[in-house]
Length: 80
Length: 80
Length: 138
Length: 138
Image 1 (cartoon, rainbow over the protein chains, first blue to last red):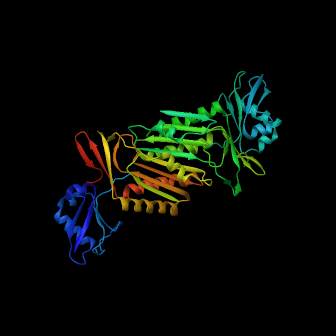
Image 2 (cartoon, helix red, strand yellow):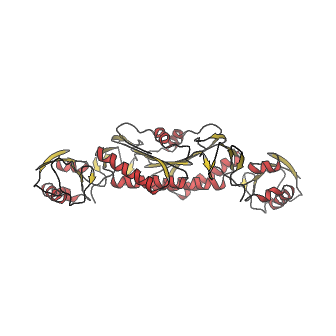
Image 3 (cartoon, chains in turn blue, purple, red, orange):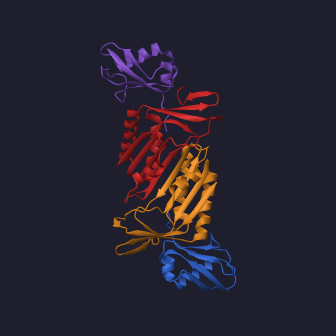
């Protein structure tokens, strides 16, 4: 399964793009995705935190990722 | 000594005027003035409080009133 | 820097904001008082504000000075209106700028709370069937 | 009633005020964020704000809904800007009306504090000698 990933803020600088595609095993969870991302882009581990949003909602970890989901890397926010 | 008195808010309705002159003994204090006013206008005693301002400052009671002082009756304030 | 204004004309929100704006400021808090259509369950038609003008200005100045002493704030504007005001009109605007927002909120709240206790301005509520000077009686 | 706006154009203070105004309101609190010229002792040239737009809007809506549940407030406007901002420009305006002023202050402060923690918007500080994404690193 190939999932499209949106990337913001400093994560965009680390990944080198504001959107990318990532190959995931069937039944991959948010935690699986985080592990794959940290392996591929080790600098993500140096951030204060990073969250994954699944379809515009913060994900906790156990959620399964489906083919048409909108998935995003959310580095530490700093709006306002 | 005759002192000019400014009168505001509900005190203006009680006294029936926004300014009046009041005869005071020499060396009268703010407390003396309050007593004279309460005797002459007993409805002032029904207010939550009333203060006297002497030359644009709240007076505590012991201040002596001099001839050219600006004296004002300050009923409970309600600005804002 | 402090700007105090007492006026019988409508107050200007943008002017208050512009006065307190500063390159050093990270946040501005603005309190806008508005004339409410009800008080204690009763419909209000309009309000009338009367001020002891010279003393009202000096008391507002004192409160602004105290806010600048007490909180880490940069600039303060306090504008108060007098005369007859209809529902929705604005009797008071307080604007405070600060390096950090917490100080702006704290100072703005301090100023409006203190203003309502000490500044010689009086508000008369005008109802369909009469008028009441607010806070006059226990 | 809630108005959420995310925009690359300058924010409009008067529009925020007008949206929250109500005949039932006794007070309005408005927080205006402004771009500060220094951070941690270092001169800032400008800021750049990036947003995950759809989610930023839904998160701001959630916060405004929560403020209306939590506090006795009438109307809430939350406007946030994106793009490059110079010193003194306004990245955010939050306006809250309430029957009584304490609720307006509490809700306005709750909204800006929560917005800074949860809304997916990112700020890059641009200095003479480089750029830093704020809060990114411990």
